[in-house]
Length: 184
Figure 1 (cartoon, rainbow, N blue to C red):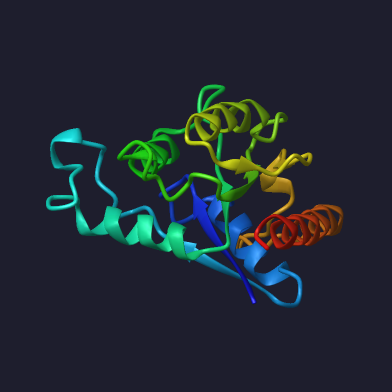
Figure 2: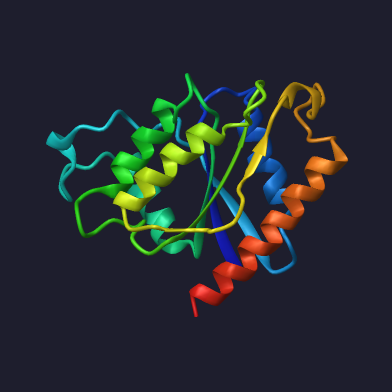
């Protein structure tokens, strides 16, 4: 069983990105399990408490979940043409302490949904730069960017657009196959 840890870069209960992550769990290929980590309890990064003795429990849990997963799937909105603070904060915690990051060499994929037409592409590029600094292995594949999300999800936040469901399904199959190759 390949395990992928999904992390959404939005705290909103009605977030399209949280819904997209739930869809990824639903559409994951056979033999792949997508577990979701909720960033809500993760505090703002504070180097004063980023020690093995003082690290907040939610951060320790996140870092342990990353370490135990075969891969990570980051699903994030884009705020003001960039990565939202929620996702950046999680990446800052996950990157520390230097040289002991659970993200080092971790296969990582990207997806995002937005109400606008860019579908989070600019924000995903910024996330890739963060991942580069963490020595994460970023999936060299066209990531999933869902533009005009309000037209593709129903009122219950189910992804109902068939073309987008096909794109997500294909991406997950390609991502899982790559993870299997690079983690042997």
